[in-house]
Length: 228
Length: 228
Image (cartoon, rainbow over all chains, first blue to last red; front, top):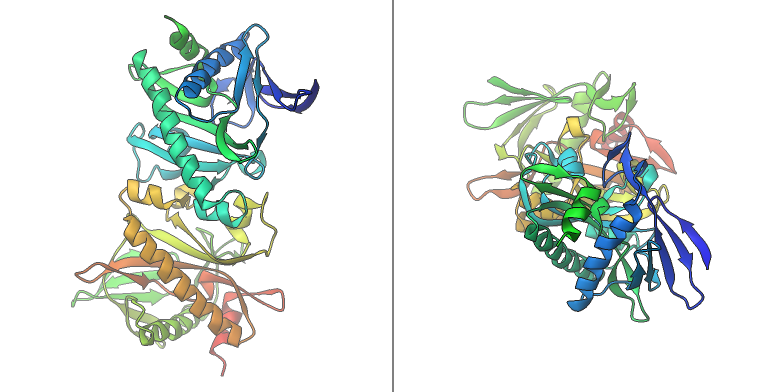
């Protein structure tokens, strides 16, 4: 088992059979000790964060599997805070796909001249490049195609999958009295047919959720979601 | 004749017949005395800049008229540095449309992880919001529609017109041995049918042009273009 990538919130190990093992860590993205799912720096370390994030990820990835929505998930061990996944090829050097239900975060920073904070956005999808140096810039489908990152056909699949998965997460949160404001996904090309599949995780660290108009921290969110 | 808007490079007066008079000024956008067509501040003042910009604008707007491409242009007076135009309704609080033939400026600042400086882009079109406070953010066609700025149908017309006009400018520059790298346009809704028309100007201040690999300043560009 070889460490192939040391991430901000996860480490990636290559397994001998060609699959990968993701080790969920206790680090959270944010700035100055404040959680921000859009941030590119590790803001704080929270004991038990890795296992907690994996628990919610496992819950959602298994739900997606039941619904025949493609992911890279194979299985997981909460005890070890690890998840075994299929190999996936990245889009370029990595993209992030955001599904927005209310205007907050970077959307508001960009479009505050037109959008009010908290305004309903109805599963609006946008793609940003993973590029810490350039603050994860927004990119259009035309530019994604022109720069050889993904085809227009792949983009359309990506948007459709993002909305479907976003709505599943939103519905699950609603069952617990939580409202999803936005969520960030990663996708990759999986298998010989290079079909588009959800990769990475679906944890509190990828989304912003509110309860009765109040923001819920990732760990608290995961606790509320996993409670019977 | 009432002054209705004091712009960075132009003042706008309302005429009694409902049309508008644009007064071209000697100010140029840029920072710290260096010209930058994408900048939101006035960088320097150059004697004769207004008339020079108007001369090239007149040349292009009259050419577009001959080709039946809709603009807001009625006529102009080089002596007074003024241009008479039809009233136009803005898209939201104003958008800018950029047509790119080579990767420079804000494109490279955003996508430098994938694009090399000067890389050919083949009339790639992107739309940014006019919003000095938020540094004129990039916006997708989906967001333009969602935020009520323009419809998808209008967006498609805008992109098509941008490419046509960009290519006309590119070809005219090429006749003088100049290469167009990028150009920025403004459009508005004109007439009772709200058809999309080119507004503002087409001067050296809106574009980046190179000759033998060397950047050509706006005033020099306009001089080269207007020379027989």
